[in-house]
Length: 365
Image (cartoon, rainbow, N blue to C red; front, side, top):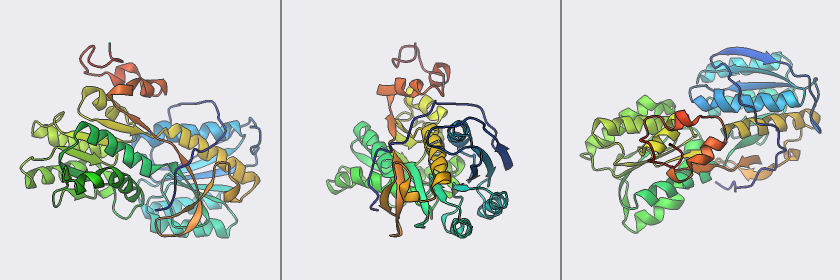
């Protein structure tokens, strides 16, 4: 992969964290205020979500997107594919029929999504590939730097457990994010493997269907059984799966003994970091990403050239296609900087500190 990290210089808007609804179907909202340099009320943005399975999409990504579009006086119509590629194809068709000016696509399945991108481009509609890369030169890829996310997970876990047997629990096979995250892992663990400090036993690196925590738990149970519980650390590619891994460890009395890392900054994961059962959750400020995508959509309503979007840099997809991307910076949350998670004001001290003994970490009185 040749995408390199960049600090996205997107304009700032007020951080808005509002409750929102998940689930399927369509919803649309209108905004009346204008934003400097953005579109006005004639900008109609369509958002095709892959899923609201992970809490971040409904609690943080969507409010950030809505805030940016509201500030720019744009209209949003969105729908949820519930992780079904077939449903998402129909959902995108419905958005195109609704007369949208920009399509934001959070892909349920990357190969299937290409026909949706083609349909939008044929209709003269610019496309943003949201959080999941697509093999298309026509889609502006917007995400946090997932290679960096993987590197941060591995750095924190290897700092906590620099030797021993490692398991690697990856996301859905066939998607690109597991490849980006694995590349970041490799930057840290490959030298340790070569030095003989770390071993990944045969069968201890696995993909997880649909990123589901239950499937991750099943995978981890299988890994533990095959290795007589002789696993010292786990690199999980998101917090939901980290939760499944920790459930499997807890059943063997190993929770808190095995170093586990994940990413997304889920509330339960930040709480596990405070409890000591998870070493790190790499927080991708999903509200920031949603807001950045909304700002990019406003710009594309004025100028459909994806290369002209503020913060866009030349990039190359996993499949070798030249295009453009906007990559935001992630933040590793460990016990040492839990205040940084609180400062984002999307989880409370009570949620972070649930069941944490008083005084065990600085932010939990």
